Amino acid sequence: MTFTITRQEIADKALSMRGVRFLHQGRSRETGVDCVGFLAVILTEFCYPIVDVVGYRSNPPAKVIYDTLCKNFDEIPVNEVSLGDIFLMRIGGGRKPKHASILVNDKTDLANGVEFEIVHAYALGGRGKVVKEPLAMWRTQCVRGFRFRGLID
Image (cartoon, helix red, strand yellow):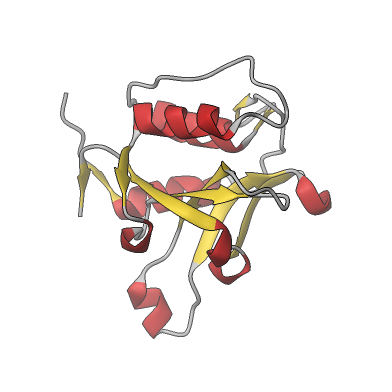
């Protein structure tokens, strides 16, 4: 199966989810999503096949998140993450990465004075929803990169 999705379409879909409430293991814009559910909703809305994970605890083992990303996306070097790509990140002071976000702007934005930003479903710090934040807040926490399969530039 071939997909013809662009980086901008992924970023736009991620941005359209801002404000969706956080819900552990959530997989719906209406009821809520967690960070993996955020990605699952995007995959589903683009009609991508998805290998989902269920039954994980609120503080899942990092391997569960990593394996789920590997089954659904292509791993890339973290320094190659670009518009529409995914960061696997450490969160909450943990050493192991178990959180995911999507980069929603590119070098053109940066040249125009807009800093890089990510969108992610985030429960900590009283946010409890899908938010857009400066990548600078998270840069040191980003440890792996992933890309949608079949992406066209």
